[in-house]
Image (cartoon, rainbow over all chains, first blue to last red):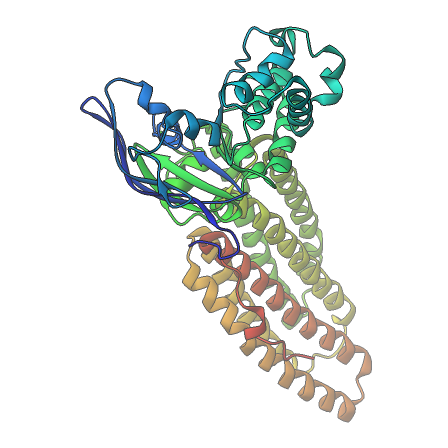
Length: 257
Length: 226
């Protein structure tokens, strides 16, 4: 059931994805609320990352991948011909499992997106934007004196926050995160989780995670996927204390064979 | 229900469940003996009951330790989390029941030399009724039977009724016969039995919670005893 207080950001209807003849997800219908954190959980190969990648058409780049069904972002079908996938990916940013900053300076990493999207007309505006994005990503105090240093020299956690700042810089509505902490230590993980929680005041966040504790800590809603099906979707505290489906219970309690 | 992938987790859960059953069994057995000791003025049996209480305390501590360890190490969720949370409360309820039975034993020693009152018979009946409830509560946990747990919960009101009427009769008889000392002990024994009934109800509530994930509506069953 949709909480009346929050508007819907994404609405997906019967979304199925095929890689060639192999079906990866099966008729997923899921409503994602605005300015909330939604976690997608499930065993490897369950289709959660495939579903995540549908939300900003990252699957377009896979040649034999076909997507059926409807995905509405603010009521607009993102797979319609009028949608420019590049603009879509600015609006729906993505952060990956492994931090992947460009082998350029910290400044250039953040300024790259705004430049290609024509945001920030001069150096002063760009500098403001870079500072603001790094501030929002909780990184400014750590890097403000070395913006010209190469970003790949930072720690893993800092690199991941650079990637988050890079996504924020192009003014997105949604940030997709595909296991953003699985390569990080617990302290860096805690910092990213804290950051997610503060970012969710301004952005809609959808996270794929293998850590159920992380889903429990950060998200308001949790969706459990299994073998391409959406088994259960609901309030996170309910999913982790009193799931409706036996399969959900078996998975989260570690009973799946 | 299928097993966890981790066999150690399964072992810990099994340890908790079997020890809760063990605590329940000791309470049932001790309560039966306590009623017998009181009725027959059997001080030897009463002493035996008193010494048995320590075992309950030890098992409760062991359960608490395993629960704390499991929460810290495995971050349990869903039915596992409910079981662990409930296990602490159930073990505490059994431990309290043990204390109350021990107190019945102590009071039996104090009154064993006294002339038995006729009123021991209805107290014994109350005790048997409470023990029946306790057996059902223990069984509801062992067999994961939410209906039986609900039955226990709904029946506590009957124990309250018996206790209330017993108290009135006891006070009236004491006034008449002026046996204040023995009468006071018997009043406390009756009260202890009524409290054991309440703890049995708490156990039933927790069993119901483990199985269904729902709390019983406590306002639906107001307390009516003295």
